[in-house]
Image 1: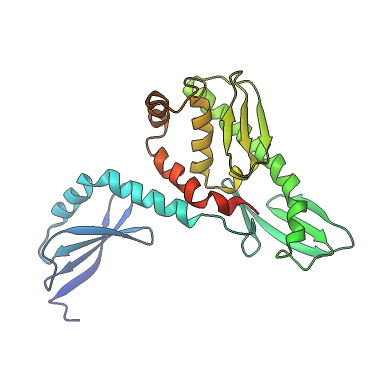
Image 2 (image 1 turned 180 degrees about the vertical axis):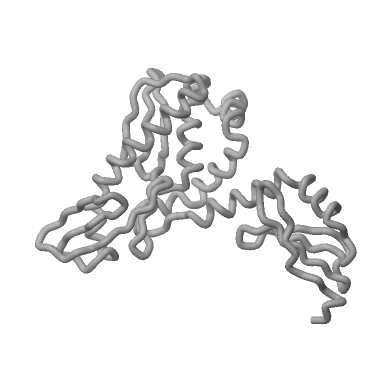
Length: 241
């Protein structure tokens, strides 16, 4: 393409995200932006100044950050088996999962490596799942307790005890006595989604309903909670295996 018609690929620096500017003298008459693979792409007329572009990004900063966040959550969606190509992400930890033939089923953890032993055909064999679930539930107890204590301190909201459950459709609950219940599968979701459920249930210590006052409490601590809530609605079934 004639360089007089299009000047592309210039990078601008912002505190929150990477920006690529595509300037064109051919058809582009106005400024616009889109999200492409985690990068903000700005299309602009040829003689648009960097200042004009930065002003556009500043006006739309909230929407841009939300779109980038949604893309990040979608990219980390878990589907089918809990691992992909020998990798298992648990909250914000990544483990290597290795399979070795053996006469009986067993699982041993060694740092960031999970060794699965058994008579099956490998990691794609559904028979490996019951071996992994007890370990995942123990990790869920540790991680959800840690996150609940962290958010409880930050929000100045107390709770009694935490119970980890195996449920198909419910992610969390809070009893009138202040006991919190969580679905262990939350540790397979993106960290922001797990934190949303923790904050959601802690806010029930203030409002035992889903009134506007309740959602105001949630939004105070997680302004973009709707992104995580939407992720659960759209991808929650992918955490079932």
